Amino acid sequence: MRARIFAEENRRWWTLGALSFALFMIMLDNTIVNVALPAIKNDLHIGVSELEWVVTAYALTFAVLLLTGGKLGDLLGRRLIFTIGLVVFTASSLACGLSSSATELIGARAVQGVGSALMMPATLSIITATFAARERGMAIGIWAGVSAMALAIGPLLGGVITEHISWNWIFYVNVPIGLLGILASIVVVPESKDTSHEQRLDLPGLLASGVGLLALVYALIEAHHYGWTSATILGLFAVAASALTAFVLLEQRQRLPMLDLTLFRNGTFAGANLVAILVTLAMFGIFVFFPIYMQTFLGWSPIQAGAALLPWTILIVIFAPIAGKLSDKVGSRWLIAAGMTTVGLCCLELSTVAVGSTFWRLLPGFILGGLGMSFVMTPMSAAVMGAAPVDKAGVASGVLNTFRQVGVALGIAIMGAIITNREAAALRAGDDGPHAFVHGLTFGMRVSAVICFGAAIAAAVLVRKYRHAEQAQPLAEAA
Image 1 (cartoon, rainbow, N blue to C red):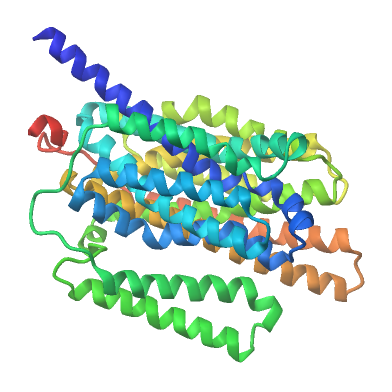
Image 2: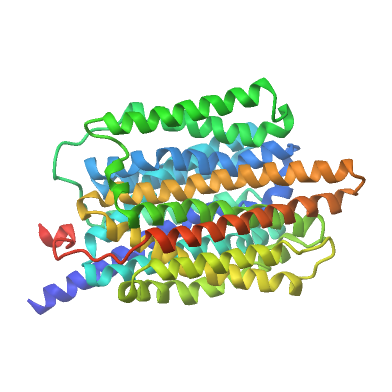
């Protein structure tokens, strides 16, 4: 009997290891590309808006399909959908590396997002279904730590690969990792699904949300080209508003909606998801545009630009699991609020950079960012999953990661629009190119700081201590 219990204990942690392995690869693709953007621009001879789409195409399809990925996992089996997503992601990574034009690369990146959307909800919902309530915070802490570490280490790894091999290899490295992940998922990951009631896909909701987000992001990225008051951009904003409104109305009336809006009646669930979209929106202004600033205007190599963000990695590795344990003991409310305040201070600090700033001038901001994100991501994830019933783990995970990925896409689009707009205004006022770009960048950081402080207030007001009853046992144990 003891041997069986010990084996079950071991298998849970092997499962967590396999999921974390795949998760690292997914999240790495959010930031590993960023340092390589100048090299991609020069090699494929593409413009700034196409360069933004290289990052945004991945984030957008990821965001649009995450809820569907969570629903498919609940319906057909989380391990099955996770494995299918891993196959799609691995194959599309190979296609990205082989791309010889902007169109091919953007298309392959969009398919990568599809694979990630199938995989990501399954990772968190399998963890929730596998670990008992008393261990779940620690497991989610490791999950969030791996996720955050991948986001932070991506620029350094991307810099090393870009400088010493070529940008294509930032995608090729996913292929052997993906093959190992497929094998591990088959061998050690247990199967689980939602058997509570009838399940079906919400295709009208998927279409409405997809059209709305695509129109919104396209308008934000292309507004500088067409003009903010042009018929094209205003029409796209109108389409986005109509489609997203239709999405909400559809979800309220669907018998089996893709997004269960009743979950948002829980203030903790709503508040933690609001923080998820705001923190990623603010942070991707740093992850995307600071590597460009460091290489283009400070003259750093890709490795130097990536290495400059190492403090994020080190601090997240140290503090994310600690934040997971603390969230089990004291709840997530004040951890998230304090973390978002720290991230806001990071943005304020980085809003004072200049054309000739040194690494030591940037370091305090990067330290604040790493600390703040450590104490936001883990408690935020634990709060969302703790506020939702276990049989809705796939949907809750899908909602959380949808909000995060929508934040990524909007962050790139909004910060890009702000920087481009302020840069153009500075050029008209007589500034040279480097000073105009830095003017736009620092203005964008001040906007990010305001967003972060708003998220801290939202966490303090909405998030409450969460505790499942013993019904929140892992599905495997209940079976």
